[in-house]
Structure formats: structure tokens, C-alpha cells
Amino acid sequence: MIWALEQSDPDGWLNPSIKAHSDELIHFNDTRFKPILDNYKYPERSEKKDPVYYQDRAKIYFNQLNSLLMQNRYLLADDITFADVAIFPFIRQFYLVDKQWFEQSDYELLKIWLTSFINAELFLLVMNKVG
Image (tube, rainbow, N blue to C red):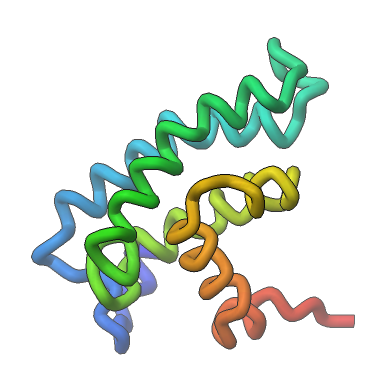
């Protein structure tokens, strides 16, 4: 994604003033949240089979994201940044495992953020299945 955005970034997703914070957030997503997501999505492969265990573990991350959204419209700014685009697919995957749990959670701003991406024209265009 970075390579592609370095070639063309018409919307300014690679915002240099927040690069360090963006890198930190994406690193946390990739190293701490992704294993929780994998175990949640594939309980047959995980040590703990109880989805509530993984929902509880994800709460720390979701609280962090929800707190960021209290400060800005998106995770790190009032416009979409690379961090939003990089993290969104993982939050969406977690959401899809148990939509009801996610929708009943207290992460109001995170739910609004997620819905805005799910319903975004760009996302719908990219996810359009051919054939």
C-alpha cells in the first residue's frame, strides 16, 4: 500500500506529520490485534474456543481506537489517512464474525467509523465481485 501511495496519493493518505503515530498504530494492529482476530475467526485452530475470551481481549484495542475517534473524525485526523485504510479491513473482519456483539458494544464512534468505510463508494467499488 505504501508503494502504491508513494506513486500516487491524491487524497493525502500518507500524511508525514502523523507518520510515527500511524506506524505505531498499524504495528500494534499487526502484532497485537491480528493474532486475536485470527483466533476469534478460526476458533477450531485456537487454544481457547470461547469467542467471549477474544472479544474481551479485543476490547483494549477497540477502546484505544474509539478514544482516538473522540479527538478526530478518523483515527488520526479529520480526513482519512493511511492508518484508517490499513486498519479498517481487520476491524471489519472482527465485526463480521459476530455482528450482533459488535453492534451492541459501547464503541459508538468505532461503529460509525466502520460503517462509513463499509458504505464508502471506494470500498464498494473495490469489493465488487466480478462474474
